[in-house]
Amino acid sequence: MAHNSSTDANNTAPEERIVLFQNYMDWEGAAGINHRQKMEEEKGRKEKALKGPISSNDISSRQPRESYNTKNDIKVAKMINLLQEFEGMSISVAARKVTLPYSTAKRRVNQWNEVHNNGEDVFPGSSKKTGAKSKLTDDHTVFIFEKIHEQPTISCNDVTNLFCQHFKGLDITSRAVNEHMRKKCHLTYKSTVRQLAARDDDTNILQRYESVSAWIALGINFFSECIFIDEAGFNRNMHRSQGWSEVGSPCKITTETKGLNISILGAITAHGVITLSRREACAPTNKKRKVNDPASKKGTTSSDFMEFIEQVLTNIEAYDLPYRYLVMDNAAIHK
Image 1 (cartoon, rainbow, N blue to C red):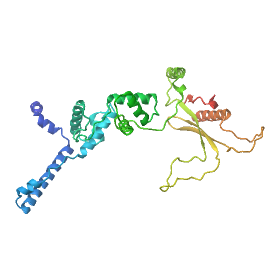
Image 2: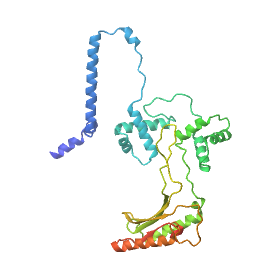
Image 3: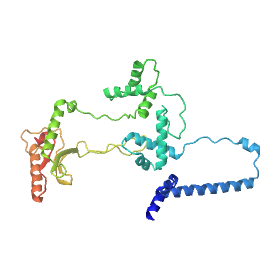
Image 4: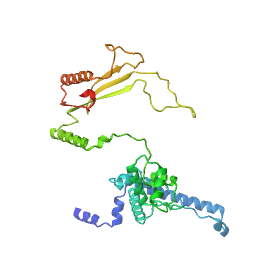
């Protein structure tokens, strides 16, 4: 009998199997929608009964309802942006992030692929864009990325001038180019970060490769066998770069003319801090200092760093810690 029942279950119509796999929340939502529709229909019948028969003039005076965007359209736009930004993300994961049912998400993605293959750039379910068509094409986008790769600090006005020189007959404003770079190319204008040219030098790249290869050959475990040592320096008068003030007035902070420079040496691991050491250097003055002044203070020197290393090794031996390697950069005091 069990075999027959399983056979009957396998022969169930496809529509019935889909119903069996439907979630409870889908049933609850559908039931709520049906109940609300019935209540609205009943309310409409009561209002019609109170108003009486509808004349033909009233019917002709009604205006057709215009199309509108639903909340799902916004969710679909967010979901498609996620899928385009993260190539490895699945539709189900993106649908959960924007709280969209999987069936709706799958259907809208298929619609988006169809309209995108046809050369249109409209989100599924939304109305087509009105106004003039953009003058910039994929060739212009490639040209923008080439120029930005050559000169990252180039301005929109310079890009516009290069457009007009390279593409004959193109008449476009810098505002349109700026909008194309932000919306279509997904580019932003940020603060520059300086990087030394020697960083990408072939000699330095080879040295880094040899060092990493030597670490791999030794079988070093950076999580359980290494202690990382470095120095951090700052001024005691350091404050946050932003603050609150009234509209139209600057945010002023009262500080001393000159403050002490503080250096902190730290030794940390993947599991916590081994030890810390702080050293204060006196604030610079305009007075002339004697040549053989023993009371003069400096920043962190090589001798201070060696004392700190001895302190780290003492803590390792005292607590029998399983660390074998000290990792540091190539600062002058570390040599």
